[in-house]
Image 1 (cartoon, helix red, strand yellow):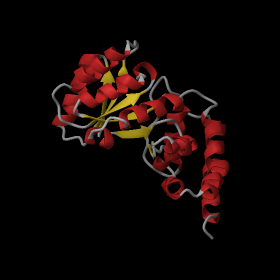
Image 2: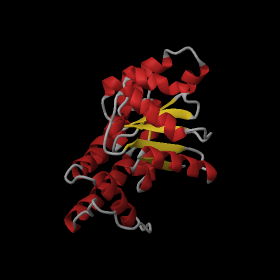
Image 3: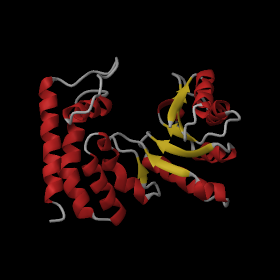
Image 4: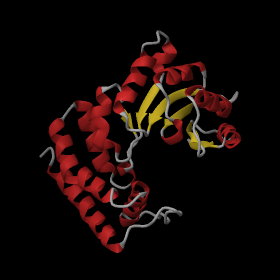
Amino acid sequence: GGGAGGAPTTARAGVALAEEGGADGVLLMPPYLVSGPPRGLVDFVRHAVGDTGVPVVVYHRATGVFTPSAAVSLLGIPSVAGLKDGCGDIELMSRIVTGIRSVATRRAEDFLFFNGLPTAEVSARAYAAIGVPRYSSAVHCFAPEIAHRFHRALTEGDTGVMDALLGGFYLPLVALRDETPGFAVSLVKAAARLRGDKVGPVRPPLAEPTPEQIGRLEEIVAEGYTVLGALDR
């Protein structure tokens, strides 16, 4: 997969390059800096996709927040395969999901929805309840066993396991994440380095965690594995 977005011409070039490179799909980022009316956002997606056939997931966030009717209009762009929510307005997302699913076509039935919020496990139950069971997990990059166990619990409706992992790992991680803007990325890379992965530093304007924050991150991850080990005994 790949990413594209920004200015309309840049987004279009990125989608085309992804298709040429054999990508399985593209995540289309919002327009650069400015937003427009709902029809303008749909036109942005239509221009970016052009006549390419690579599946495109539209990132619903920042300058690219869609109304329910505009989201339904995306069904008219054949290469658009789904919508990834990074906005966090669950009422709006519920209206979007309901609006698209109410269209009586196979295309609407197959349209994909993703929870793309930072540390998505924290909001996963709420999103699953409105028909958005899929989510992207940053934790999977550095603690895949924890991420897998949470996803299994979500699929099985095991609230006890979810609560244990949320209380013992995810919520402390979110508290540390919220200390500094951009830590949704910086902490993931730092945690990957802690486990021995060859991961470089973040790029400006993002900042690296302080040594003290890295120490707390290490403790949070260790506690997460302790909680995980106590489950299913």
